[in-house]
Length: 483
Image (cartoon, rainbow, N blue to C red; front, top):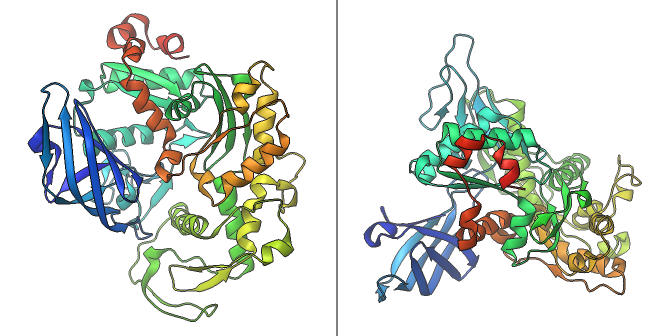
């Protein structure tokens, strides 16, 4: 995230390297390298979210006072009030790619990142990805949490250094997170890429679960990570992942998206992404949408169109869905308040029992159509199964620090239901403690926060794989230095 004042960066006049993230609607913490923020108050005037059209999102406000205590110089200074716009620079894992035409040419675009000579053109970042382009596929370099497409992954790194880091790669050590089940071959290939291609001075690989534990002030605990493709319980003991206790379930964000699609089909709700809409008119609740299609749209690919439809569904999930406090009961769900939702094309209606029934599959997959309930584990069963596969002596420490992470856990009342079910399943001799950050950023990017904490520790500096160690020991040193 970058702090921008008009046309200039706050870091320029004061020589500060600034990182910024939102902690609450009215409070922001400013972290500087070489400086300690003593006090910061923010008056938020307006909050602008990332909309479905892919426009820039962020927070407009006014910083009323900043007092900075310089550790080296030993003095304090203040800044006068000034307007700010906080620009979020994180971008989705999915990227757009346009392959070569038969004549060897590609579409000329100012925001496209050209790959290798004669190779594809990549469109990275939210704004670039959501512009309709002919023959552009929406792809992800990751599969099952591991790097699968190395060319597109390298394109993301190139884009990050060029557009966001804006500095030579050879000047900065790199700490990367990895899935606990990452293979040795992929780890070595990543190490080789960073040292040989980017010429970085030092490198380190750390498991996402370990970093999530560090972000929550723990070295031992059970990490429940529910993202897009899978929900995983990962036991961590004294900063190390216990591989034998990892339990995975495919019931996660993509599963919820699929259930929402089926609901819309049953309701005859047509999913129209914003890129297709030229104009729309307000209609009564439940009435057919009255909208006009854009003219001269390029012939987009199915993968990109599906990606844009999924963006609409994900907004619906965040706005409407709620996990029931107890096992789903149709009569109880019918008594719950409805939530009104308007789709991008103007169609709008109230959602009642459906908004509780869809996420119920995460906790009780037995009633989900098309799934065999006997072979799928609900969220609470994933946790208890993982703990049961670990040594009995460390189980109290795991139950005492069940850390919830991942964007899929942000569904309303998710943690309340999980806490209730785990309380019923936890042995009486064990003390259960569920740890779940309330803010979206800390839940989604817990491993990044843990990485920033780890890399700042003085004791960590000896753990880096240095350039010299790599040249002497080769890429195999990652297995020894990064367990």
